[in-house]
Image 1 (tube, rainbow, N blue to C red):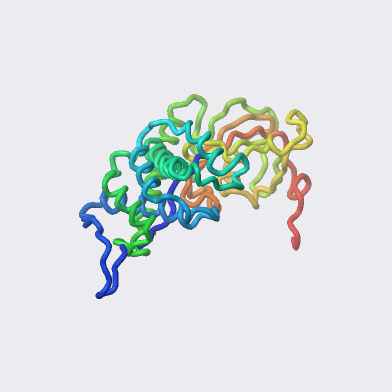
Image 2: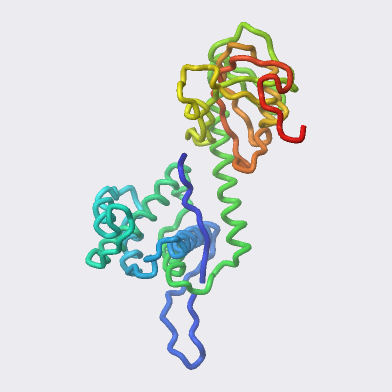
Length: 304
């Protein structure tokens, strides 16, 4: 599943009145793109500096910045694998200062590459101003006073990510509606019939025995029931669920399915309502094997 490199913001160093003040470039954040770019840079920097790596404070920060600036693009970071092995050792348990400059630069390159790749994937590259991104990254690394309040940061990133999910979900449903053998039911759920079943259909109170593959709004596989089985061809090992204890989209969709069928269920985020997928639309590939009265196939939850 694709990682989204969004992390947290920090602080602009102000000296005491009688102390020398560090020279810091003035950063003007006039537009939404300016504020977003600065925040993404600072959050990624703070994530690095607050990571569990015990040696992070020993990094050459200027080299980290240089690597970040020079690899915010589609340039490969394959060479960093060998550098990291020398720098941290094959099990990431060492710290060889002989490779401090190269290793520090690769840390910056890696962060920039992942962030750039995500912006390309999410079609948000146009929203990012590299100079503001770099300014935020520098301030984050050096723990300078924040130019944006914590509350504004959280709101900015939440709105940004919500917009990404909404756009990607719209594209997912747009593509689904172009397919054959689809129908849309109450709740905006799209059912794609890959193979029609020949058996009956459950009620929304019944148990169902299925195999499934869950993909997120970007099409990445999140979970597959096949991975939990020793024998992927042994249907008896397939999981069973009661339809009152699953995604609301399953509760609504399964009474529309027939036993023995294979389907795809496209669920809008309102039909997901799960803490791991807040605001996200998802898709389930489903092989529907059997159904029965409540808790004849699925285990009864404790206390019921």
